[in-house]
Length: 63
Image (tube, rainbow, N blue to C red; front, side, top):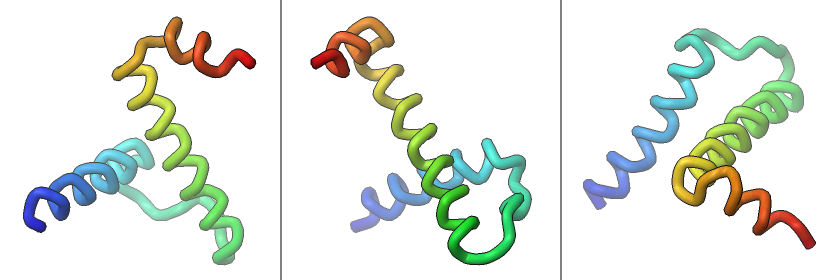
């Protein structure tokens, strides 16, 4: 449980750091949700690129 808590905290800490450790740019819950979703998508894409590499990611996305 402790390891899971540290892992989750690291993710949100990283995203918060990318955001400049400030508040959301948007107002209203729907827009803030969209903004957070974009931050999470960018975080996940960056992790996939670091793990697989850009060439392998592009090959995996081709149909």
